[in-house]
Length: 354
Image (cartoon, rainbow, N blue to C red; front, top):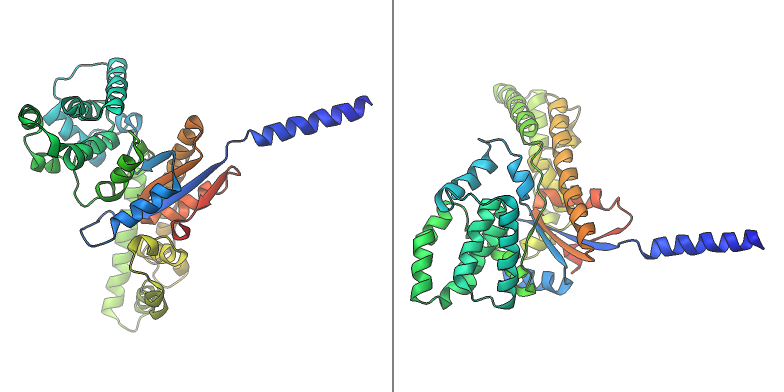
């Protein structure tokens, strides 16, 4: 009797454990960094993502903590530092004060979104905090949703703080053709969500840049040999890479009018890998192909994507989210799906299935 009772207790405990496991659907949207007018029907993309009903939306931005860990002189550090120097030089608020100020402003704006001066101050506070994602989001809301309702006093305050839209563009705080301005910020606004979650990882930027530069040099050596002898083995390798990296007639037939749909299918991931890795692993062993250099690139690429996925999962579990949209450069989509799908509590949803 005791044995039966003990067995039943174990079954109940296991069942409870599995029933309380946090399950999450993750939709990774391979995105273009250039989204000019007419490139895509952005409203359709936004509506599809809105209907997915995400609890969280992530972007390819660094968190404040990761931004502060960057070395001065790196591109990411210099970019936001320039904005900080222009808009918030001399701001001495400590982290605790700043966090409380941001939380209070966010609560107030959630109750009444037309506190325009408060929103302008909030955008600058995010810059001081090192939160580029949400500074950019607030500037999007200011420019695209709120500025048309400014009174004279609010417009004067805007001019005093930011001068004009061109200034924000020069500081890269407003990027008219980015995927955020055209898709993810409008999505957040439509969902009435006040935050874009950051998930980028740039810990491996230096070794990645080194591996890339060395690979590029090795490829140029192969190209030089091919140019000097069009019948050489290296020339045949280059011709094979060119063919492998090109759209086929079948590819063109299968493409739709939507670039975002096209970026969500397996074939695009194959091509993108070939474009980004000089042909990729398919050409290991080919004459003149720098196998080891390409492998070095893949190592750093994998590390970055593993870091990005870890950042997503950590925040998803903290927030107990059930549905998540991750907007990321198209080259990251497939590898991030592969990494995240290893988690038994994650279900990957394809944009192509929406």
